Length: 196
Image (cartoon, rainbow, N blue to C red; front, side):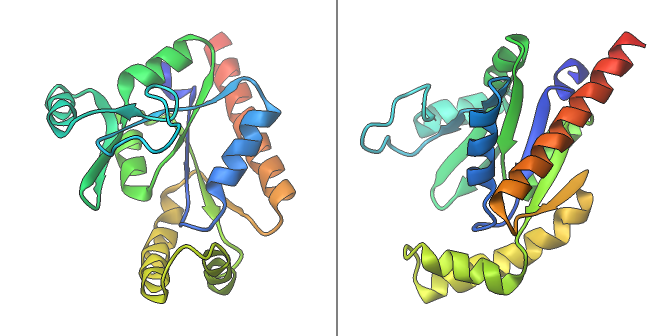
């Protein structure tokens, strides 16, 4: 399994930290980067395609894949399961891609256990106040939901010390550049180790 580790990048951070935006820009910036497609038991939303946006499975199919050990990591959010398929990650890495997993901290722990050499980057908001402002600007959550997300964020931020790098997303372009450099340096070191 260690052969996959060098091509695997874990990106985590609290809701509102900007991790999806940063990863989206990284993928635009470099065609070597590929975002893994998650599996889920939720129904497709308008226009979503199986195998492109998500791999859509029934509860029974997902449970069978858990029993077969087919996931790098999986978790239950609300009443639905989400997970990262080993086969999807392997296929992308085998095709020469650097695979980025945008996952929460518990999923990241599981991935690190399976792939110890995977690079992990935690996206940190500049402050709790800024994080709360970003969540409120979305206009999608109630006050109680924002309070819940802030509580989760505080716990996630405590886990940041378990990551290889922490990048503060104060200014988006700088944060994208910082993460890009971290990944490129990691790949360079890994390739040198392979040669040596």
